[in-house]
Length: 504
Ligand code: GLN
Image (cartoon, rainbow, N blue to C red; front, side):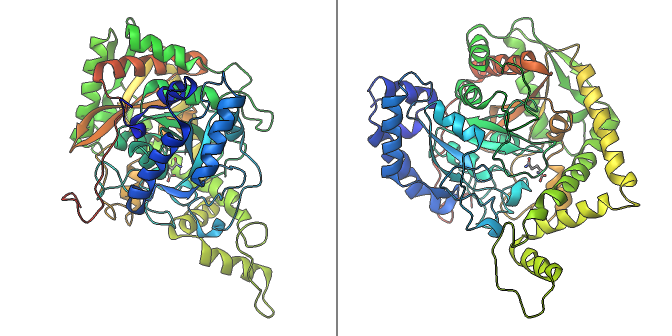
């Protein structure tokens, strides 16, 4: 084999498997070998399907789904998405023993496209976090620099793909959870337009903000994964009825022809924000220069002071409010461990005991704040105001995007922190999401692509697009043009166990 198996991209592996040039057993064994060697310290996976089962599934898929685009290829899935027969822990002790009894729509669709889910990936507890460190099962590490975080909350998906343990993965993005880890691990990551991908089978954190989306090592692989999972679903009433974007064709156009004639707005006021590290700003400027070489006209854009300053608080109020309601079901009766009640214990006392014992600090804090912000007297002051700000963000972005094809901005506002550096400090943790939350507040699509290395970590920038399938397709064309310019694809880290590396 010319390329080592673990370095194969998703579509490349699909092609070799289809043509009989790659033996599924050899391929899966190579990936599982990486997992065995690396995952003790990277902690990307929370559960892994037995090798023989995965290989059998791949063989079956290659026989019965011959023409399917992803026939036989392995994919990792974030642990808040239901995959029948596998645990769905959400990174929480509360769901430690919970096993999915059905497949999420995205998982059904992955299977229909021929893919094999090999395991579930580590994450911040209930997707609440930006570094992966709120996971109850230990923080995943950044494969490029194991002393640092990979970013969250889809921390395990990022680590798995960046370390060559899977060629692609699904994550979920409520306020940057696909994009931030993609930006810190040299991956392509996509937060679809709201409603593009079904949330049926995704454990809800904040429904009105979140989407499931793909993570991969090239723009084409990213596009192929999106095409596999996108489209209307009668089990999720918020899915859009229209035809999903032709992402692969759009990406191919960009890769082959560049993006001549497209206009991109460089978001100047975000770059000037004190919360944006100069290294992150330089990365965006470099992306702008590369896009210009690909025929793109780069103009200055401004979100406005109000949008820049209020997006984060508006996001956190809405996310916590929705979380406080969504997480009410983890009470030790409907979900969560059932323990014997104490003598004469009231139900309220029982719920509190279970929730106190099995939920982590970050989750408890958010449930309490969210409930408080929705309580009478405070609702108008916080929740209703946040909804108004959300409208402002949405309108501003949409009107900016009428005059241009996409906005260019950071995703990560700084290089990844060291483990333990940011997690104890909520303000610092929340500030990491500054550039990512506008896409969720507005529902607009956003794509992250790697641009350059910072401290030997390949880091990415964000392209934010307009509504509708055209808005999404433009992002894939621009990302294709960018990939052609950077040559950054199929980057696989070779981490050394923490403790032996000079980095740690
Ligand atoms: N860091 C953000 C939060 O904690 C976003 C998380 C996400 O996108 N799931 O809410």
